Amino acid sequence: MTGYATPEKTQPVADIPAMLRPRGSNHVGMRQFNERVVLQAIRLNGSLPKADLARLTGLTAQTIGLITTRLEEDALLVRHQPVRGRIGQPSIPMALNPNGAFSLGIKIGRRSADLLLVDFTGAVRQRETLPYDFPQAHSLLPEIREHMHNLHQGLGALAPRLVGIGLAAPFNLGGWHKMLGLPPAVSDEWNHIDLRTQVQSFTDIPVSFAKDTSAACVAELVAGRGRDLKSFLYLFVDTFVGGGLVIHSHLHGGIHGNAGAVASLPLHVAQGRAMPQQLIARASLWELEQRFSSLGLDPIAAYDERALDAQHAEASRVWIDRAALALAQCVVSGTAFLDIDAVVIDGSFSRAMLAQLIAQTETSLKSYNWEGLWPANVVAGSIGSDARALGGALLPLHENFAPDRDIFLKAGV
Image (cartoon, rainbow, N blue to C red; front, side, top):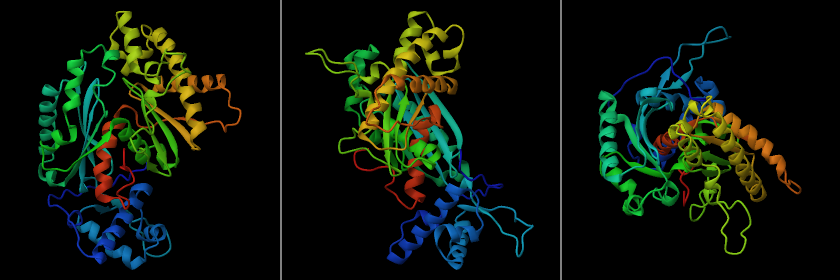
């Protein structure tokens, strides 16, 4: 994970650190905030000696010394080997302890469910994938419960350090069922389920929920392009395309959660009663699946490297051309409403496929009239298919250890 510190040694500790327990007074609350500021500085910059921590945070050297000592005692920080060769005493970089805390990210999608166990540095420790044609709630939820239990218990003595579970799923998992060729009864099953409540019933660990594309946007914000881009429109191409919006390093959902809901973007002006196609019909991997199926090919190849092999290449090329034109319209529309640093495009397919899609999108942008607009910068996302589950896993880590608890989950996200 780019930008996360990777300590040279780990410190397994089973007891729950004191900083995870609530603190009552204003003085203690400030102490906790300062500890989170120090942790965030190390998370963003990698291992740092105390002098650099004082410079970056604006805290005194004495305060930094007290904080790092407490965080070491809580097993959230570890010391690297001293750096010698400079005048004076050798500096000792402080780094995040990978075993200091863990979180579990769960993504429930229309083609698979993924569970990622993530350590304190943001690295994925374990992964479980449950593939299906479409999720059946009555069978999938018990499977998720079993895998959650196994991953938690697999931590052994470190199990008490699992601080939270982040669940990522579409708001309307049964939506667009006609497009998927599903009977209403199959998709409607999800309309009567509160996913967060269901998953919370499986465990005593706190469970948080985010829309799947919002979670993917969180992963990009924290562990990817968000380190350099403060405001961006995020487009994620999956079975159905979706998106997110970051404004000033905060995920913005809007009053009703519509911010970044690009799937519903109309692709042309309505003509009488004829409704225009939405972006979902042209820039979703579901359409590529249909193209592969019509040729007698495995539709799941849309999600892996086979999409560009000799058998699949022509169908993929046609899909890329159509999807890129639609994505380009989305980029132009977004730029007309938002003054942002860039548009970030990612997806649950191969990186080679992403590169071709972005290149074609940039070409397609030349087909649109940019008069009156500053051209948008289109860049590739850096996370890929793990983005939704990883974003889910990062939510509890942020809630427990970052200075600004609300950076991701604003109202409506």
